[in-house]
Image (spheres, rainbow, N blue to C red):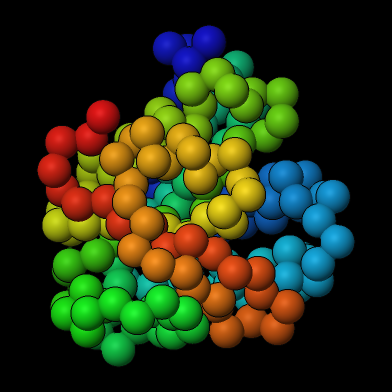
Length: 182
């Protein structure tokens, strides 16, 4: 099935053209979450902000013309708020950003019928293969099944982070260097 998946790269302008579809997939994927943190108002605010970020890139995956998932991220600029809320002491240099050092994956979602078929991995790898940063970061809830997948894909935990949103959960902050990915 994954060999038939068509991936499309979008810059911020291209992502704006499919904005409502992205929000609809988010609503579907997070429909059962009781926390307001996963609500539509916060997601729209987040997405609007991320679309302004330098280096924004979105990869969508389509099967027979249907959107089955997507992943997006952006380059972390100097002075980024990404690392605010770090709960674990880490060396200052680890969190230093230049605008070209780190690519942050903000969302990776696959709709339920297409999970556990390699779609997420293909989206992940397609996005990161096109990036020039020396490393990437993402946040994942420790109880999320994806946390185990990320470890197999070469990601390592650098600490715990609670974003500055009301009702935000505690996440594992993960990092992937430009070394070969497994």
